[in-house]
Length: 125
Image 1 (cartoon, one colour):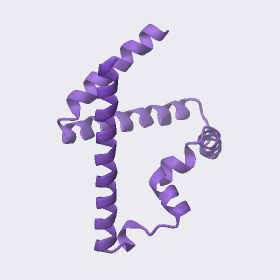
Image 2 (cartoon, helix red, strand yellow; image 1 turned 180 degrees about the horizontal axis):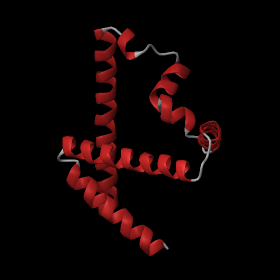
Image 3 (tube, rainbow, N blue to C red; image 1 turned 30 degrees about the vertical axis):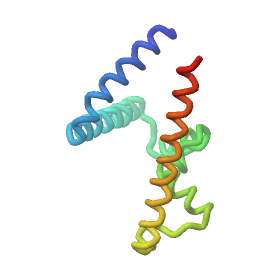
Image 4 (cartoon, rainbow, N blue to C red; image 1 turned 60 degrees about the horizontal axis):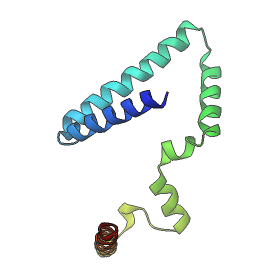
């Protein structure tokens, strides 16, 4: 089983690496895949004569149980910003957005420097 999982993991990495250079094509293919998947789920539910209300309840409970319900429909950023008491992006002033960009850029630079130091240390060994 792990051999097959490794194969598909490598395949996914190669495909994602290639398609990331063509974001419009990547988005189109992803959209077709998502719609096709959900159409299959819908058609299968119809074939099994699962009532719409039962399907709604099952889907709700399943998403709730696996922890995807809130993050899928709201997103992590919205939840985290709400917990921090931050303003919504459209409520922020240009100055606040620029300050946040500068802060994130500074963090990125620090992380890059730390990566370089770790590489140097690992190369010495």
